[in-house]
Image (cartoon, rainbow, N blue to C red):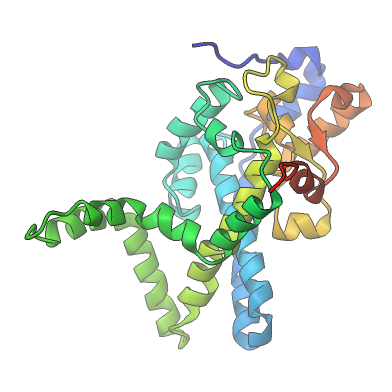
Length: 309
């Protein structure tokens, strides 16, 4: 199976430039993780004190839940912390999702980026679509249907295949075992909110953002990164797209420099906080003109909805 073409950093940077770009930090990744949780906490407090701000809080928290995924993504590349044990531990427990399973999957995406064997190709392959099709996806995301299918699709499938008279408990037990990490962490969160006197807090300030806004911004991010990029693209400067993000988009849609996705595919072990500097150096030498890019997320959404309804 052909792997995606690679670039050599020496073709773009001097040794003096590349060394700090590729360097891990013992504190920057942890500081970003602390920032992410602090924003989630502040938005939660805002929504509790001023209930009218709950819709805004849901958007902020959903974007930072994506932020946790972005930091876990850095950890999957070993870029969150120079100590492998700290790198994996904080990703495993403070980024909510298990890192090793994700790493095994995600590195295949980089190995075969935009090639036939890329496991993420299915996410971008359907585009372009009609505007009506995109809106149906948005509705499914914002109503929790996408989340429910992802979280409980296997359970509902097993229940649908259950034969008459077959006991229910083994199916539920198997699912509970598979979801035990999620059940434990979220049970603890519910207990913490209840102890604080806001028993409903977990449902409004964690589950609701996760099941709605997080799903939408994750979809938009996936579209922006790889939609309308040719399958089996030979040019490694065009395996992914970098999207210009304004302040509001960085707050509610693309946190922690996730929009610099072309640079990430070119130099996948560079920590996320160094990607803007990578961009500036490449722009200095005129390289960005050869890279896949977009002026904003709305421009991408317009581009992928060119198929008549």
